[in-house]
Each structure stands twice: as structure tokens, then as C-alpha cells.
Length: 308
Image 1: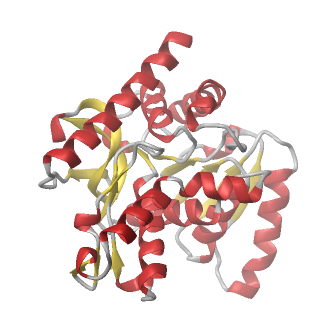
Image 2 (image 1 turned 90 degrees about the vertical axis):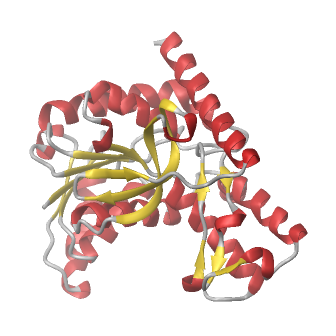
């Protein structure tokens, strides 16, 4: 198997490392900054004898090297800076993702595409539009990351292992995301039985602001360890045909009353991409929040298309 990672920044490089060290596939990492992808690939190649894997890692500034890739992960884009919303990134990252998508369409016509670039939901829509690929093959990484953040905060609050915590976050990747405490458990026990409503509300609010919290702390960048780990989980699900039930940004076709919009919902993810969109029995308030989140994504798409 061959995976192409577009963007050799912190997220892309961390993802390449995880894929190679897990022995999942050969990886080619592409970046427009000459020397950066080559240097990081060489560094990872020299680590291989220590870690003990035989996956080949190549770095390049030429898209010719992604030819025939089975899976392409797009991480390229401008990172968010303090005081910058995800929507502030809209136009500049649309230009970047659009260019990448055009290359993928030409060189990897049968590939599955995972988009990581923000604003995530709009960029995933844009990548699918430019490639013309079936929506099942163009997926955004957001729900896995947001759910992991909720899981981490629940584990910290209760002082329990993260391995016992499950959680679900739907909706757009941003302030309008929809954490679902009702579907969050610790070894099958609902968190509402283990903590106060005040604690749940506090954790939900922190989850919505988790990316902004890290940006404020780093001051010169944004999160990358957790986003890379989330993308890796999706890559593994595809390459190993794991058929994982994960929240991801996909194009709804009537589910939850949402049609033609990319937004975070639970899916079954395997070698063919989105094999099923799962409809949860949401309350009226939860459903309203999800639809409102989808409406915000739809408006951002309109803003983007108006400016193109």
C-alpha cells in the first residue's frame, strides 16, 4: 500500500511517523518548501532500524511522486494563529486544498482522500468538489479528534483510564460542534451517573474550545499530536478495512434531515471509505444543534463559492 501525505508540517510529519512505525504502508510526504519533506523523510528513514519497520518514507516537492497512491491525506494549509477563527482561514486554505485536490484527481484517480486542513468541513466539501470523487471517498477528520478531546477530559475529571471512556462529538469542527454527553460512557456507564451536570457542562465547553486553548498556549502554532493521532486512526481503519464506527465529516444525503452538506456524523469506515452513515436517536435539542451546525457549514461554503 502507498499513502501520500500532503504537507510536511507538524501534523503531516507526525502522521507520517505513525504510519511508518506501525508498518502500515510506504509513505511519500509532499511539501512546497524544498528540503523540508526530504529532510524529514530522511530523518524518519534513519530511525527505522531503531524502531524496527521496513516501510519506505520518501520526501518530495513534486506531486509526480504521489502517482498511484491508495490513500491521500491532506494536511497542507495555513495553521490557525491566536485570535484567528477557523473561518478566517477559509480563502487561503481553499486555494491550497483546491490545488492539491487537482493534483490528486490527475495522479490518484482511485484514491481515498482524508482532509485535515481547516476549516475542516468546508475544505472537505471543496476537495470533493474539485476531485469529483464519490463522496464516500472524500472524508474529513474532525469527529475522531473532538471525541478524543472529550474522552480525555472525562478521564481527567473522573481519574479513570482513557481506555474505558467512549464519547461522541458530532457537527462541524469548530464552535458549533455537538458533544453528546448522553452517548458518553465509562465502561458502559453513562457519565451522568458518575459526575454532576455542572462538571459535564464544564467539560463540554472545554471540548468546544479545546483547539483554541492549545493555540493560546502555543502562541506560534496549533495542535498537532492529537490531530495526527486522529488521522492515523482513520488511515488504519481504511488500510486494514477495520470497519470502525467513528465520527467523521462526510456528505449527508438526508440523514438527520441534512442533505448535500459535509458535517460530522457517526460512520462505518473501511477500505471503501464511508460504508454507512449511522443515524442516532437524537433528542429534539441535539438534532437542532446538529442541523444548526450544518447550516453554518453551508453558509461558509456559500461564502467561499461567492469569493472564488
